[in-house]
Length: 105
Image 1: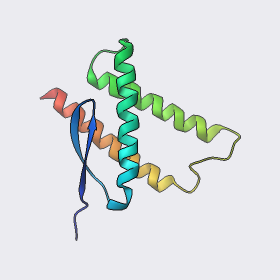
Image 2: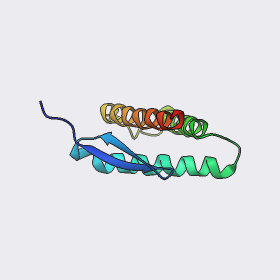
Image 3: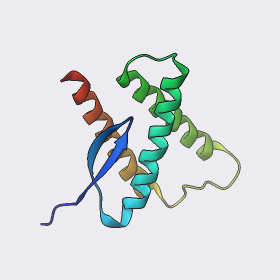
Image 4: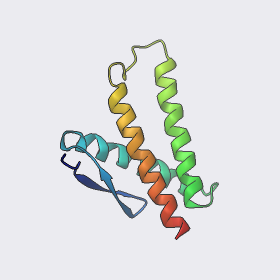
């Protein structure tokens, strides 16, 4: 059984190794960039203190965006992509877990 290669993503100036099939690298990089920007915007607003809280607020904002897009009357842009979304969500969860572990240490 072969191991899934890892990709290094940078979020808030910290690097994270995330398992990612080669055909999904561009999507993961885009997701990481989007998360990084969300977290920077939240941190810059100065209303949320602590890296874990910034990450949770970013996750909530992104979840809200996804749910809003799914609940609208316009065609759903994610139809047929549930597996890819689940994979990306799993990768984001892993990155957030690693971020939390770094804060604990």
